[in-house]
Image (cartoon, rainbow, N blue to C red; front, side):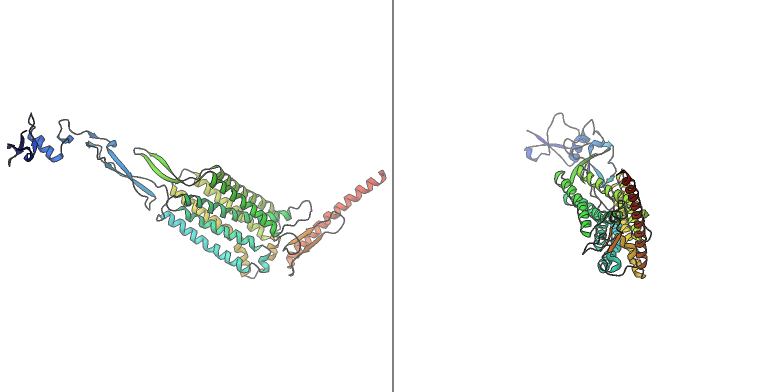
Length: 441
């Protein structure tokens, strides 16, 4: 078979033998010089050398790739022409498109702000915790049960730091651990407040004039039940519903399907945990509202009420904003700042007045003694109020070995007189009933 080879002039063709030294096959009809030049430049089969020309480019002729998340909490979709495409003109290469990240990087400004707020909020909480441990055995603080103050402050400190686990790539351990840290620490914090306000409500809500005895062990049992219920619900959520990081496909207009790795937060048991914690806050608000009539000398009841309402207000606003269809960065920012602020303010509202009063030498034991353990058994701090149904006078005993302040004593004297008047009224009613029943007998 003969073959051709071009000479020095593009128009010169030489028939050469053998075929191995030829640059192209001899075809009939002979292709034009322009076509052969195009083939040499663009390759055999190029649409640029065909009579029809290349097809017009469309969006389907471009492939896209999703970049990594940056500090702006955005990732960019970048386009490039598909290797299989031979189009020309038409739609040009699209500009990059920014979409939201599926997580908040640790290097983003949002994470920096949240970390700074959490760090600043943790400082006063640590000061409160150290102060309670140092002065917990002092008389002015002992009646407030330092153990529950420590648990309350410790729970608030852990809750304020829990938003720090919201940053970084979504993994199974991070998604599950983040929920456990927040919900358990929040339950310990609100549970400790609820136990304290419940004890105040028990003594001043004693409308039946019965003996009331609430020891520290009783309060610990109640707190253990509150925290244990949340633990069981979280354990059921983790075991049965298998939360963690899972892949989702999001359809982006004019782009296509984009894969994302997100944390699974939905679930029946997690919803029950949230409802349970909301119920604890509402019960605390109700009991503290019932205690509003307690004498103003018992200032701690006012501080407990302010702490609970602060948690309810800030948590409610944070939850409403986070539940809206907002950007992930805004949701993490609002949740992180709201959690840290509510925990810190709640602890400071309750602890700072004690610290200030102690610093200025004010005796605050009269303002806190009502929140001590109610009951006069041996080995228990607190107060026992016994009202006998018979004409026996009302007996008020105290297990404190230290002298009771004057104002504190006046309050209980007034309480005793009120109870004595009620007993006298009951005696008179019994006497009237007895006199009516005697003639009939």
